[in-house]
Image (tube, rainbow, N blue to C red; front, side, top):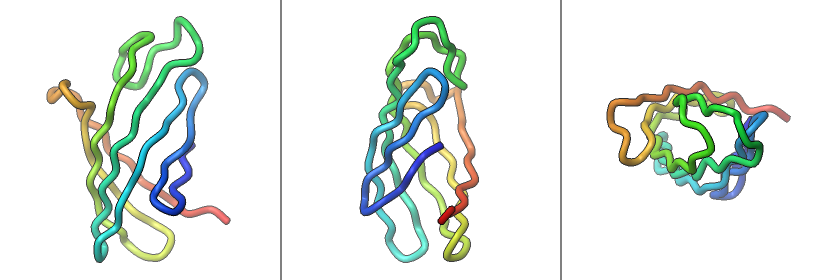
Length: 89
């Protein structure tokens, strides 16, 4: 889960927390997110263990409640990530 609010990204999963920032220009979204482990022994979605990652994402706002984005961890160009974002209220 990730919360995008007022230029900041905060969230996490069962072993990692996410902190970062984002910008929106027109319908274009850009985000940089640090992925930081907090539970030993849990692999990230990139099959890394106990390793800090920095994600660069770019995408498109589809409407007021949906966006898609793609990116990769910095320094790991062979790994890709695609996300679908849905606004919840």
